[in-house]
Amino acid sequence: MQPTITKPNIKSANPLEFLREVKAELKKVVWPTREQTIRLTIVVIGVSIGVGLFIGTLDFIFTKLTEIVLKR
Image (tube, rainbow, N blue to C red; front, side, top):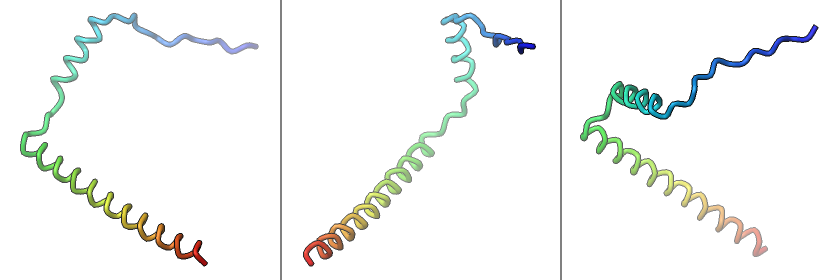
């Protein structure tokens, strides 16, 4: 006995309906305030600088260690 294959229920691709749904969903979004945006942007920049310094420091250390090992 062969299993039956059912097709998924697919709506027709109507661009106008899609745009209406997008507009309805965007009305539900809770947008951050200006102060939240500024504060979170500063946090992202700070974390990025911190991670960059950390990785840069590790790179410098490993480069120097590699130079020491290869000179012997």
